[in-house]
Length: 129
Image (cartoon, one colour):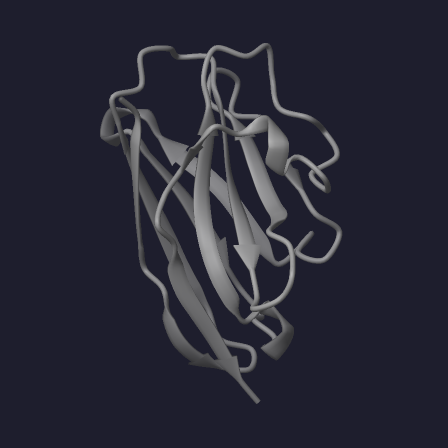
């Protein structure tokens, strides 16, 4: 059974940085797509960034392109989300997600939530102005 555990959320001021971590256990394949999603109350969960764990290819939503970086450490079974130049609109609960044994990640991040079948419990990020 795949389990995902997020950490690293917190409160920062406008322009600050945070790094989220997602430790994965129980994953059986090397060719997976993992990603970060975020959700605010009353809104749908939306994709932020995806990474192909076999190739390291990364894809970003337009809203975070150039500010966020998704990366992985395969030895630690961990995916990171480095978030820079944070804005109040980045405030959300951030979730790690995974889908195993796939050819790759979609290059367009928006609308990809249905593709993922494993989810973490989330970590809160709050950006104040």
